[in-house]
Image (cartoon, rainbow, N blue to C red):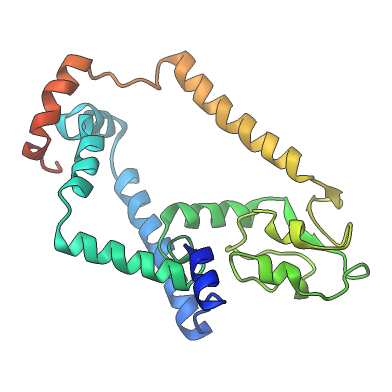
Length: 221
């Protein structure tokens, strides 16, 4: 969407700092609400929720939410699409709870984007490429909560070694190694869940298919 905006208007817009900072706090508030909702439930309550009729057809209810879209839903989605065309990564930057979680993990991660000032030619390409609009070209180490480690700035840098993802001791971490580590962690968790039997729902297929046509009958507990 932001690429569509850039090709249409020849630029993406950046919100002023007085508006940008308060809006960025929204995703942390939303994440806090989710964590509070989950954290306030006992393990038994979570299991009862997941195995109950509402939890069993939650995916169907989400599908129906878009299939039978109301005027309010359509208007909100239209506004989000428009804002995403004008402002790069509007949803991720201001409203996504998962984006907030990524930011917090980035803050405690020992791996950071680092700039070697002696090699930097001050071209500013890294700052232009950054989807989080961070001034990478003016930092020695990127410590912002908004950095998601996407390697866009590193890929745009024309000078070898001037910008890199590095662990403590300036040990360089190439993009292929970071991607392999992420894939290994993801596949490891999913593989363990499948092997241990937690991946599959305990709801029998006949029960699930019986609940689908009646998904509208079940409200949130």
